[in-house]
Length: 96
Image 1 (cartoon, rainbow, N blue to C red):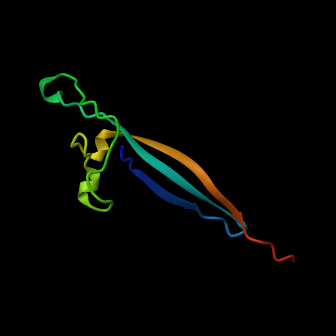
Image 2: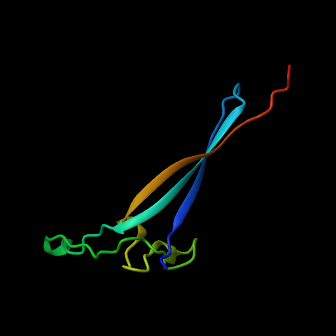
Image 3: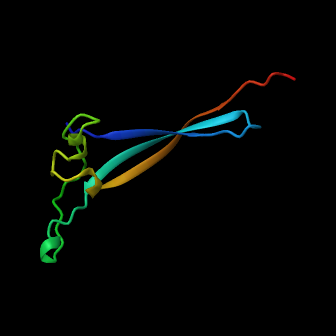
């Protein structure tokens, strides 16, 4: 079974003072295949074939930024962002 690291970030849109509605957007970030060029030192192009980033440690540690499959840093893996609007809320009116 393959492990997949999904990073969720919450970005709250600040409502204006006259507005009563707010929206929360959650973004799912996934790191796909490794794009590190291992032959750059000799003027060539060769990738290692790692298809998906798998963290080699627990979240919040420095090992979480290293891929368990290929040993590369997470920044060498292609980043995929899937924006999703989770909740659009509005506060009840006071009836004035």
